[in-house]
Amino acid sequence: MLIRKEQDLNAIQTEVFDILIGFNDEEKQVRKQRASRRALEARRAIERHMEERNLTRHIDTDAWLEEA
Image 1 (cartoon, rainbow, N blue to C red):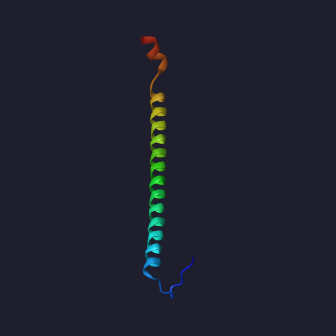
Image 2 (image 1 turned 180 degrees about the vertical axis):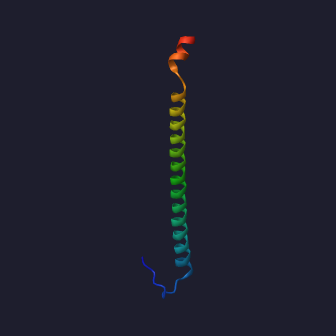
């Protein structure tokens, strides 16, 4: 149902329209939050990977095993 700007809306139509607009705004917000959460998880995974890689470069595993 398309509503033209010139068309007068009764109270019920206005309320339904406002509810639909509010629902769309909430959905946008939820999608943004999900995208932010995924980006944060990806960033943390990259940081973990880089930290593990740096640690393995600096640790001589052969020397550690010989001391035990």
